[in-house]
Image (tube, rainbow, N blue to C red):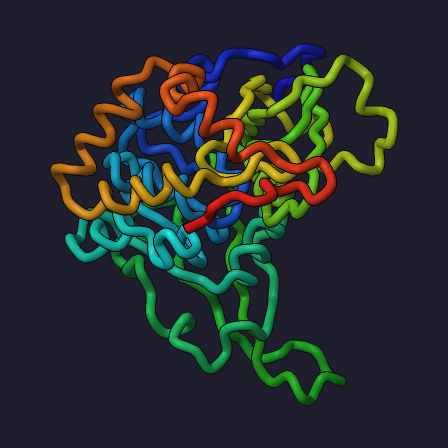
Length: 325
């Protein structure tokens, strides 16, 4: 835990420090909303490998990490980028080719698993999943689990209800906690000490953040010290959970950041086309990621016209009149 009063560092340093090859990492956001894309691109630039990735219902971030060969294992509820890729393309191709191992849970299961990690308990019970193949079909074998101390010995446990008085609940499902080495989230505002404020839906970001051993927060706005103490009830993550703060305007691009900018349909449509083949995806990586030194250069390459087109309307929080086709 970093308890200093100023945790502001550069993105390259944050990724180099906290994301090592083989690390268990978690990224926030939901489908094409508030993915920590600048951090994802920096992980790709630094050519991190063997990552064990956890996500709730991520899209663009997970797909690009998988496509670039950074991910060996994935635990997730859903991997899709809305209408642009109802199932993420590089994710799908990696699964079909056997390049990654995947274990799937329901959306609620993943929320419970991160919540258990945040609470410091080994599991949480639920009835969700009973009667489904989520219980029966495992992505990670028992042999793999025996050989990796970071994996629970089972995907989940179904047990008899241990309490009397709940006769209508004969069985419960125990889902294991997640405690990533590092979680990375992108938010609208944070201060130098790490106090974090998310506008709009937080998705599972807050429990993902609190479950992690280390937390990197990238933010659109770096608030002045102490200013987030005003309206403190709007803050979701306290400073003592945060290890690094990176001031990074457009850090979620090309996904949306509510009240700041919308997702970019031009970029996402082009990505969908380029993700279809190995050669076109490699060309995309060379041009957009390896060919740019940092996220600011990527945004400069996108151009001011596109950035203006996705600017959020202050009343709705979205880009009004944006052609989303």
